[in-house]
Image (cartoon, rainbow, N blue to C red):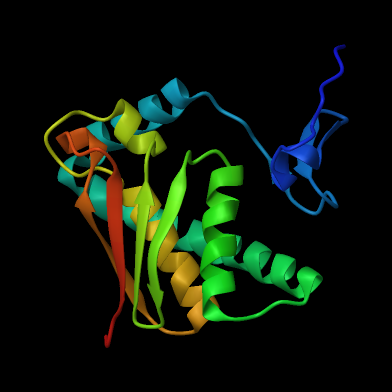
Length: 178
């Protein structure tokens, strides 16, 4: 088995542990799986084939649930570093998404009522059919993270998508009154 220099890598990668057939990160409290992007693309295509246009709602709802779980990790990291504030929360969330393999993620704007996030190589847009916004899982995750951290309801819209030919996927996450 080879040895790898992990200097300069993300925290998630540095803290990977593989023991007894299980992959964990950091303290091992949660198990992870790794799948190739082509497998993720096949999963997306299979769901779309079965539920048709309802794929957007199914993946958005799943993404919100995933996002709420990710928010717990963001809060844990902030507590560990003894930092607070909206900007720190938003930046830590973006960093976690990058560490988990969502590619380059940029926080464009962060206000309590509105966040703008760009993804330059979202997993969904890499494998999707062209011509429409397709990053429903990702936008759900962003809304779920915002909801859990801010304690309010948020909705996310994808206003640009690489699957439509845009240079990046851009999401506007807005506080919802409903």
